[in-house]
Length: 303
Image (cartoon, rainbow, N blue to C red; front, top):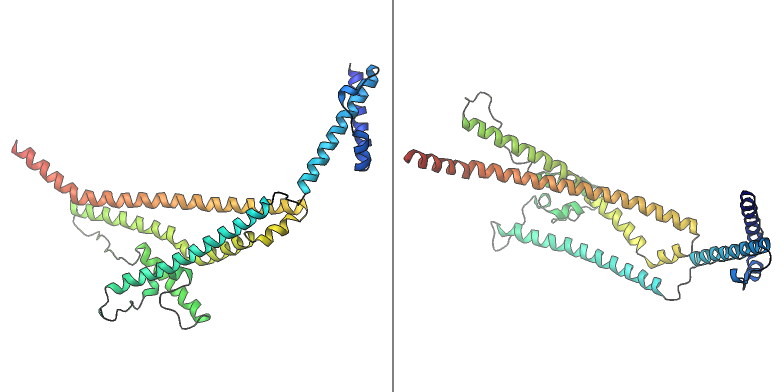
């Protein structure tokens, strides 16, 4: 049995190599009409015939698979339709982002002018560019006089100031004085100062990344525009398979990086929500807590 098995394997390999070396048209002619049920003769002839049939079928399947994989013809026109849909979707996203930024600036102006000392001719605060999110996207409420070097210098000043305002860095608290006499009031203020300082520090960590918001937005927008362009789809569809696979690997790597960024942002968001919960707990503990304690003491004393 082992001898027959070895002979069968060797014959299969020999036939496979023989047919693979043939021109495809000649191999197709030899394989046409061959079916396992058509084989007859002695056991050896029957076995060799079936090996030939199965080898032919395998080669034809591989040839068909390769032809279909490398084909750039889409008779259903679905690919062309999807290409246009992707391009239209990217245009909609870009338009929505631009509109959102414009509306943000308009709403910020309305809010800032609401408390103006000149109601008949409301003015923006002199430091409006340090109070508006649009500054992060290089679109300040009060345009800079120069779009070159001076604008860059102004942004390097206004963006950190906006982040400082956003994180609460500019809110100053007096440090607890170690010389204060020990008391419940001293302990309460010390805990208040510690909690607020820790929350502010984490806010600074989470929001300082906004300094590069505009840079990341421009890079992401440029890449999105490129891969949503119908011309890019047409070009990549006509390139060799190896080049297409390299494109796929590059985009998979970028997806991994973006997913890691999203996970980090989610972790930061959870931490910020926990910080807000800590502040709320502290506030309730220092306001409602003493009131409830006083009521409990009064009820307990009257019994």
